Image (cartoon, rainbow, N blue to C red; front, side):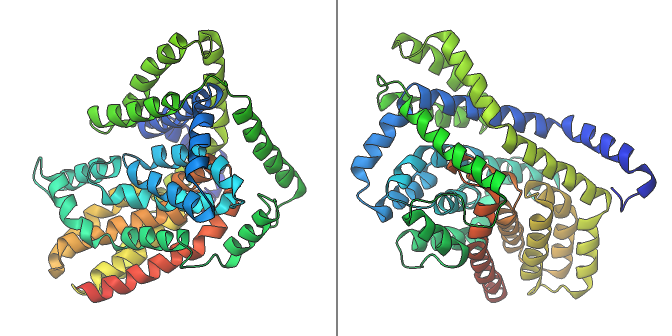
Length: 424
C-alpha cells in the first residue's frame, strides 16, 4: 500500500480488504474450507477417522509403508487440491505419528500430491478452471478447453517431477536432508513441531495443538466403523464429480446425507453434530485468515502491475525455443512471491499466449510451462492456499512445512527448467 500511495495507505488497505472479502472466490473458499473443517470434525468425533486409522495401522508395517499409503491416497483423491490436502493429512497423521514420522514429512507428501496431481488429471477443479480460461482467451474453441488442456499435460514438467521426487523420498531412495532431515531426527526422538527456531509461545501452542488432535481422536465414538469414514469421503468425491467438479456443492450434498446417516446409527445427536460442525468450522479460521491475507497481497501486486512488468521486461529476450523455459521461471517467481497460482495464470495468459503465437512457439508446451509454474507456486509459496491447508491438515506448523519442503520443490523446479530447455 505504501508503494501505491503513502498518503492513502489506511483507506487503500480498507478498500482492498473489502474488495477481497466481497470477491466470490473468497466467499467460496471460506465456505469450502470451513465446511471441510466441519466434515472432518464429524469424521473424528463419530469415530470414523479413528476406525480408519486403526485399519491403516494394521496395513502400515513401518515408516515407508505408512508414507506410501499417504502417497497413494494423494493420488486417488485427485478431484481438488483442497480436498486432497485436508483429507489425506487429517487421515494419515495419526498413522505416521505411530512410526515417528515428522509432521513436516507428512505435510510434504500431502502437498506434493495435492496441486501437482490435480494439475495432471483432466477431471479436476484445476482442469475445469484452466480449460475455461483457455476458451475465454480464444486459445481453445468453445467446448474444447479440456481437450487443449489434455494436450499440454505431457509438458507439465514440474508436476511430473514433483510427484516422481516425492515417491523417491517416500521409498527412501532420496534421503531426508536439510531442514527435513532435522525434522525427521526430532520426530525419532518424539519431538514434533520444533524444526525451525520459533518463539516459545508458538512452540507451546504447536505442542498443545498436537496434543489436542490426539485427544480428539481418542474422544471419538467407539461405535464408529470404517464405513463411517469411507461413505462420506466417497460421497464427497462422487458429488463433486456429479456437480461438474464443484467442491462446494459436493460438500453440501455430502453433509446433507452424512448427518442422517450418522443419526440413524445413534453415533451422535443432531445437536451434538451441529456443535461439532461449528467447532470444526472454527478450527479452519487460521487457515482461512492466512489465505485471505494472501489474496489481499495479490491484489496489491496487481495494482502495482507487477505481472505485466515482468512479462514486458522479458518479452524482448524471448524466442520460440527459450519461451517455455523463460515463462516457467518468470511465472514461478511471480507465483511464489504473490502466493497466487490461479490468479497469475488468469492475468498472464492474455499476454503470454499472443507472444507465443508471434514467435511461433509450441502452444501445448507453453501452456504446460504456465501450469508447471502455477503448481510450483501453489506448492512452494510459504502462504499459498495449498501450503496452508497441507500444513493445517497434517497438524504441522506452517513455517516448518514451508521451510522443510522448499529444497525438494526447488530440485523439481530446476529439473523442470532443464527439461523445458531440452524439450523444444
